[in-house]
Length: 241
Ligand SMILES: NC(=O)c1ccc[n+]([C@@H]2O[C@H](COP(=O)([O-])OP(=O)(O)OC[C@H]3O[C@@H](n4cnc5c(N)ncnc54)[C@H](OP(=O)(O)O)[C@@H]3O)[C@@H](O)[C@H]2O)c1
Image (cartoon, rainbow, N blue to C red; front, side, top):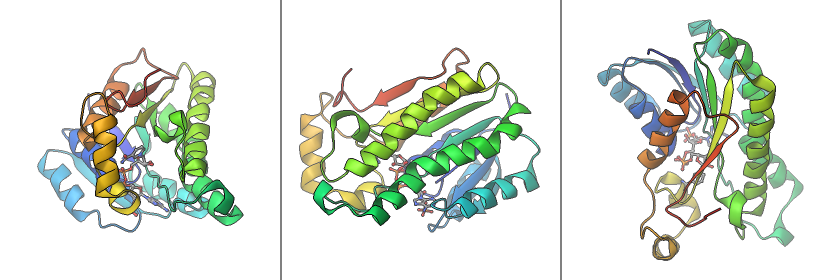
């Protein structure tokens, strides 16, 4: 089935690999912020996809609205929205968190996904077997020192996923993926080599994940019409329910 898919944060890491995985025969609208998107767009075209790109800072309402305006310039419907863009922004202890950092963390990781969901619902209602996939995090599961506000913001998005899944049923399915440690540019900024090695050795499967471990699950959640309101934890067993 050919689909029209919007992926936020598609320039690097999980978003870029998801774009490549979903490329074949689909129309992809690839959002980016600061990183260039051209090489991902070229690869998707080489894999048989049709690509449109849009640049927007999703930390602000105006950026979210601008992105959806761009989407409506190229399509009258959406089959899939992948709310992938997100970031830890800065590591701080609870005692050193500031209001302004909390606002930025929640704006990017929670509010943008909620607002994009709201703005894309009319387009998704015109889609074929439409669904939404939200990217949360293991940080919301087991407590992540110096990433407490980020974990809370992802937890809020996870909770929103279930509410939206009930409210938007039966037309639109809404699911989430909670990645564990996935080796992407995210960790160039927020983790040391030593920390990554120590997490890998604490992980039951014995290694950290790759972006395609997550992209495979995005594909599953798009394809499987009997899954909604679900969060798939993908972390090599680091967190088990
Ligand atoms: N890697 C992990 O271990 C891990 C674990 C749990 C959850 N996650 C989540 O998975 C998602 C993808 O992360 P990743 O690991 O692939 O990291 P990444 O390579 O750093 O990608 C993050 C993406 O988010 C975009 N982004 C950042 N700030 C933005 C802003 N203000 N406005 C719009 N877009 C913005 C980035 O766009 P630009 O580069 O274009 O600025 C980038 O494409 C994130 O939501 C992250 O929280 C990652």
